[in-house]
View (cartoon, rainbow, N blue to C red):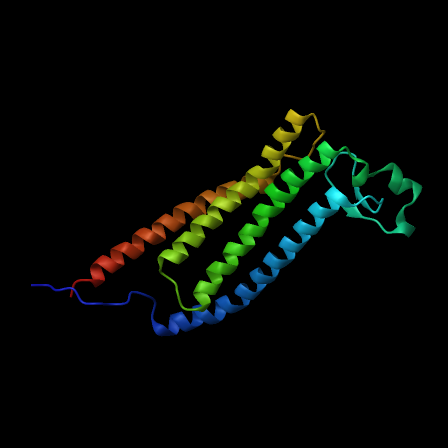
Length: 202
């Protein structure tokens, strides 16, 4: 009569050591990207709302944001860009929501979950609920990032604020990849459950 015994399911120790060593630099990389993106997003949103100078500028079609030094404020630059501080408050608030929160915020969360996933791998956690959860969250935030320009464009249209450049091939790729990651997470979870069921019988 078969009886259940505790058995850890996972890759061989040599493969696990390789996974841990390969994951370490990616954990550091995505940790840096997460911190940098969060800092940039917060600074940009605060600047949009509270900065009153002329150095923080945006193109007339609202697609390019730039920081211009005093010596670079030439007549050509002034004619081909608009100071963000000169925009109506409604437009600046929409910029914070559409660009700062939807686009930059979702990208920040992508880096956060990549960092968390590779930190799990670095610790030797490969086939666990935590891994599946991170993969699913990555899929979700990739879809959000891909849809963010379109959603932002619709919000701008409703508010009567001009917006261009809302359709991007990168957005389509992000939505597709996000959906694939979500399915892959489910496949990994199913495979883990099957292996655990098999390992419970000797």
